[in-house]
Image: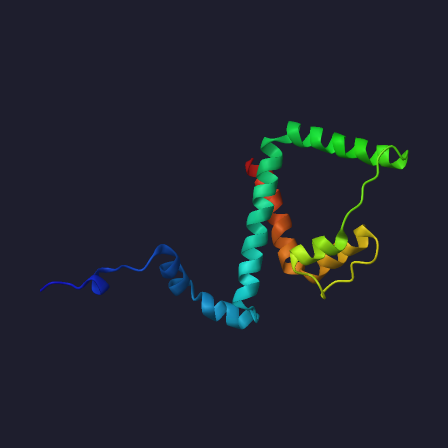
Length: 134
């Protein structure tokens, strides 16, 4: 009795855990789509990496922030001129019609964060875990 290759293939760890935990049923009860789960996982991972890297490379990041503050002050004294192409950033991020980018940068960032609340929360939790583990 020889087994075919198809019979010999074992399910992976992710498939086994998803099957035993009834992930599909849980997602159905919470009214969560697969895209939302992927977004939450992606934002959480990005937050974790950001927190971890900030903890590991805090001297470099401090220097970078000081340079940014110096550039901001130089712009205030009209020594340099900095401009941000918000339309280009909007196109690059794929937010062309979703968010009004004509206001102040802080209000635009807040609107973006509030429109993606689940991703924002997972990014914050991931960031804090990254800081703790870094």
